[in-house]
Image (cartoon, rainbow, N blue to C red; front, top):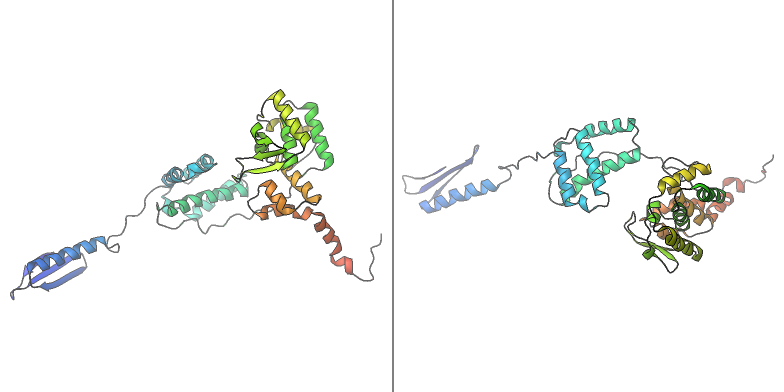
Length: 335
């Protein structure tokens, strides 16, 4: 790059800021030529086409740490998610994040599935990884697309919800009263059956949230506060229990032992949650409103509550009244 005076008295700005591209222009004065030289040089220096941004070489573990610092720490399960993501980084040998290979991730997922990890857990973990890239891109920390954006989730077959009959409820309560080593099990079970609460919600109930014939649950899974009325007798029973035994403490292990003694067999993973299903199932069978049930259970969407809709009396009656056999002429069932 140089500025030279020509034989005719003009000044030539001969600028080549980048190899392969040259700018030449004549000016009347040396100052004009120098200004042009500076203009070309500075503009090309700022041109991303000529100054490509250095490739992001950060490892996946670095992005996981950054995600946790900027966003993950605010989540209720943030620590648990980070632990799972850290384990993933180790299994995948901590690749450069932007070069995370979907095929490599899919291979790791297959090995974990063969080791007995459930499809639901694997889908959740894929969601955690995607969230790292999506959140950091939204925060301006990365500028490339999510490398796992197009990966498909496992298809999960809907499980039949297990719930207890009136007889099974009686058997369970008898098993609790006759041989339970933890006094808190009975009132917690009664709260779950009476309000559709999750075990952790009922177990965490405090006296300040039981008043005026209603129970208020906070710090719920959906982060919403909800209030459910209960019978006066149940309120009195729980208050008397607190006077004699203090506030509830961890009782899930004692509950599982009582469930085993009762002889009731439930699918794996549905032990305490079957109490919540039992409330919802009986609520619908007795003619309860599906929208009211949604509010009681605290579901974020009606779609989750619709799992119980088939138990409504009108739904069952229509299945008999509207099926095609009901209108076949001249045909009678014979035994």
